[in-house]
Length: 491
Image (cartoon, rainbow, N blue to C red; front, side, top):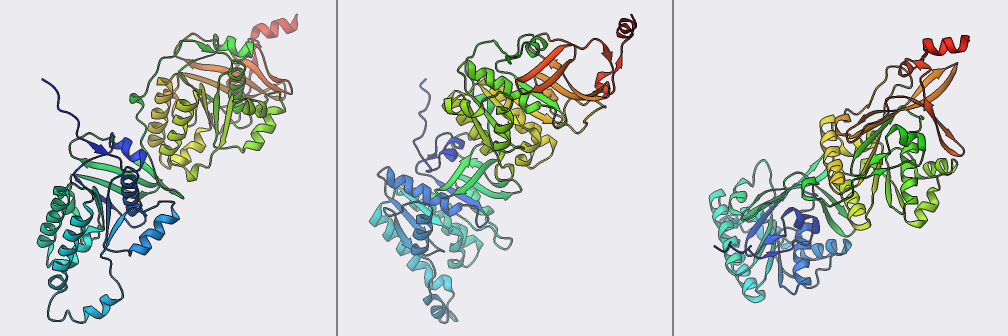
């Protein structure tokens, strides 16, 4: 038996929303757009109508609140050209105040209802619109005597438009005195916009005839209109990649890791401030550049200029790698960025530029973008890390903990279970001097060296010593010489 064909769809005019809807709106149906003022409902309608005009369709804007001139002006300020859109301007004007004086005997609903219906039928007959946007339909409440009649009128309005071949998008104003719950039942789908702590978000709780991408998706209103960033779903992305190690180019580090970090794994480099975490991660990027591979580094906690100067002073040619296209560095402002938007940036780097290494410096700064507790941070990092692993990307997370010496801590963010590899750096006091050590705590895919090595950042790059077997209690911050080393010294 032949499976039924998918119903025809049309784009909303917003790519990210089309992705959430798995292709766009189903034609000939009506969709409710809910949300508080300023969340972007009218802008979404503008995109919807403009997309129709661009595709050679006819489009009608039924404006019941803002005047046509205001709508066109607002659209132009966002670079949205509505010149091909027809308007049925039913917005209040200055004469309403004068006319209201005559409503002492007859209710406004009795006076205005018939002209409104005639205007709608005339407009639909004249323009034969393929797309209709009504903003907001809740204004019809003032043309009806009660909630029952309003719902009946709204349902009839939608059925009339869709019966004439239109795909309809309409907005509502949900207030405590006049909730719009009844409108959700009469629509074929509802798109909800909301303002939360992390910014404006969009959700599609109802969509008849098709699945949607669930989750809370992010919105940004830009100079060119509405941009939607869907929630990252890692299981829908994958590609083949070789099973191989990614060396650091420092023989002693590669000995610790039994060859390096494996492609398509997540690594955490942890340690206190100033110990060299970012430099160690950048060393892997430098080696990848020598192989002709591209890496991207997101700086959440350090300025680009400081990062470049510091690395170039020890022989890591950041500017040269950028000019060659083997490195892209982005200085991030986490408070202006949602995790969904950040994930979209990462996807573009991986899918459009074939990036092989993604490094995030650091987890604490990224958590500001998440704007939530450890559980939300873990979910977002898990989704991002899983996506990158599925795409064969080597991931490096930099995690800073507070303890400069003593009381060894693997990670500070509670995300160690997400990592395939954990490489740690630590400050220790030896012979009256503060020194650094490097070690490997975890490696899922291969064996690793269970010793510590002295770690140093010099003007010629990273310098790592041999296994430190002459001391014990190193991670306590105040190591002691072993008995064998004492005997050797005494002889």
